[in-house]
Length: 99
Image (cartoon, rainbow, N blue to C red; front, side):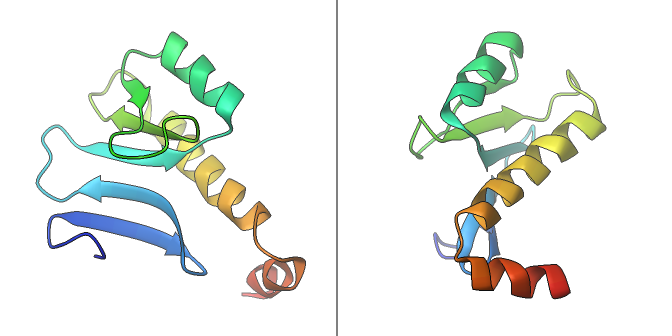
């Protein structure tokens, strides 16, 4: 919780891939995204906005309002995780695959 007691941060190897406000209602999550895909998602899903308090080119804020499926949310979270992992050194990526 590097931003205080109200923001839960998920990291892989010390790098953020998801943030959420503990008390947000409805639940909102920030996920990392390729810039082109970030724009596409914002244009196609009303629940997806530019990342709140984040680099808007690389982060989206998703309001979990049941307008997309849980599976879609999980895919966006997985994409965020995988994008961060892909930016890590190859040695670290190999270590993660062994876990």
